[in-house]
Structure formats: C-alpha cells, structure tokens
Image (cartoon, rainbow, N blue to C red; front, side, top):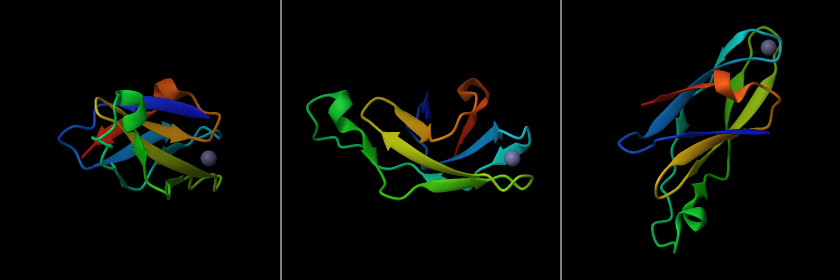
Length: 94
Ligand SMILES: [Zn+2]
C-alpha cells in the first residue's frame, strides 16, 4: 500500500497518472476530494475519506487499482493498495 500527499485547497477533484505494474501508463478516473472534518481537535483527526474508492484500470493488463483520498485540515493524500512506485505517481488537481 502506498500513499502520496498533495495540496487540495482550491481544487475539487484529482486525476492520477502512474505506471502500472506491467509498465503501461495508466490514467485514473476523476476522484472527488472529500471535505475534511474541520471540527477535529488536530490535523491527524481531521482526515476524512469517502466510503467508496475511485478507480484506475490498465488497458494493457486489466489491473484494477482502487484509490482513496484522505482530506485533512492542512493537506490531503491518496492511498492505493498496490506495489507501485509512489514517486512516479502524478496527481493532477482539478
Ligand atoms: Zn498494466
């Protein structure tokens, strides 16, 4: 499982580009950034995540990646259950 932080402020959604385990370049569908829990006492408690993931499907090997977005007071991060290189994930904020 990998996670990568990004700055969500002023944006409503993200699209990810990354390299699949097969080497093919994959683009995710658009994932909505949830609202953080602004009533939380600290940043760690403020992360909010939608119940359902959004997906990226490789059109070469049909690998299906489930992606979750956790949004907090000061930042946000995406989480993918996959063994891919997080440094090569590009997070496009929209
Ligand atoms: Zn693939």
